[in-house]
Each structure stands twice: as C-alpha cells, then as structure tokens.
Amino acid sequence: MPTEPSFVEYVIDQAGLGDRLRYRKMFGEYGFHLDGKFVAMACDNSFFLKATPALAKHGLDLPARPPYLGAKPYPVADELLDQPQKLRRVLQDTAAQLPAPKAGNPRRSRAAEPRKDRLLRFPSAVERDPAIQRRIRAYSKELGPIARHWFEIMRSRGDDVRELLHDGCPTVCVGDAAFAYVAAFTAHVNVGFFRGAELADPKGVLEGTGRFMRHVKIRPATPVDAAALGKLIDSAYVDMRKRLAAK
Image (cartoon, rainbow, N blue to C red; front, side, top):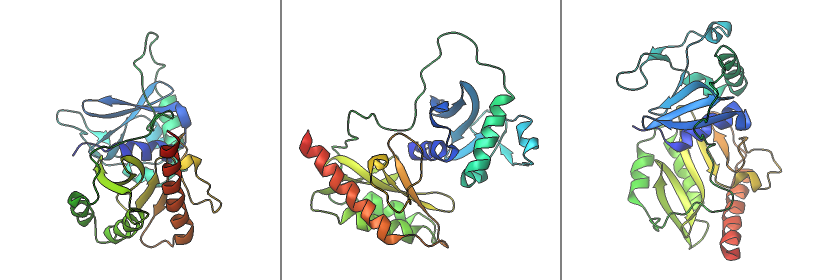
C-alpha cells in the first residue's frame, strides 16, 4: 500500500524540526532530508532510518527489512514515532554522521502542508461516501470506534458538509473545501485539521509544528478532553465557512 501523505505529515510533526526536515517523492514513496542530508524514508506507511552509528548511540536495536522490492534492508523505526524527543535526537545524530550534501542545484523538496494562498478542494466530495465506512471498519477493534465517533461528529456539523477518502483518510469538507479528517495509526487515532495552526486552542490539545496543519492524538487507554476537541471541530467548520464566504 503506498504511503499516505498524512503519514508523512505525522512524521514531520512528530520530529518537530520545522523546515529543516523536508520530504521528497522517490520511487512512488517518500524520502526525508534533514539539512539537505537523506536520513530516512517512508514506505508502505512505515518509517525507515538510514543505518548509521547514531542507532547504537541511542541504544536502538531495530528490526530491518527492505522498504521496497529490490532494496537493501533498512532499520524500521516506527516505534520512534510515538517518542518525539527521541525521534528528533536520532534524526539529528543521523544527519551528523553523514557527509554534507554536494554543491549544485538541489531538487526542490517540500513540507507536508497545503499552500497558504489556496484551500484544499475536492469536487468529488459527496454527502455520504460508502468507502468511508468500509475504511473505518478495516481499522482495529480498538481504534475503529474512536475514529467512527469523531468522524460522526465532524459530518454532523451542517447540511453543507461533504466527505470523501483523501489519501486513505476519512475527510470532511464544507462543500468541496476540506477542514478536518481522521487517520488511524498503529496505536492511536489522529483527529486532524487542515488549518489547525490558525485555530484557537485554549486547552492546548493540538499537536504539530507545521505551518498549517495540526492534530489531536487519541489513544484507546488515555482520556481525551472531548469538550475541547468538539469545540475545535466546530471552530474548524465555522472557519472554513468564513474562508469560502470571503472568496
């Protein structure tokens, strides 16, 4: 299964390295570059690190497998994605072990966010998309009910809410303009907002360091501030309606 861009965004947000960590498409998947140095890749929604002495420095004995057919084995570092501080240190130490990038005209890399001057629009969004229910049913028994609950709250915000699967994630729109999504990972669900960085968050429940996107991470055994999250969903919906009215 190709890597979903929401997974790439999650890696960048968890690392918390800002514009220093960027991504580039490669072989249909994604490579991560820290300060211009290739340090990791995302393939099949898994996170692979470049093997360097930095792994031993941090006491990591990671399993290894080829990220794609014909590749050599790379350390699989999915476990670091739930340890942001350690992930950040490992990436920085990995880059420190690598030679400086060659001088020249480097290919452009990107951060995992939409452009600020336009909305993320999906003319194919519909009132009810059967593919979303199939997708949520495929989640684990621990994560499926969480994703379903919050997605139902999203889709009930107004008569103008439409939905679709975007990059494999159940996504809600005002008309055709996306404002929120749910995404299930190995042990948690993200409730994400495409313009989350611009939402008021008095309870401090939003996570992420990107310029635009933010998310709330929900684990099955960890209480979530449901009232605060509900207000964020309401705010994201109202905010998108205002943006559309201003265009």
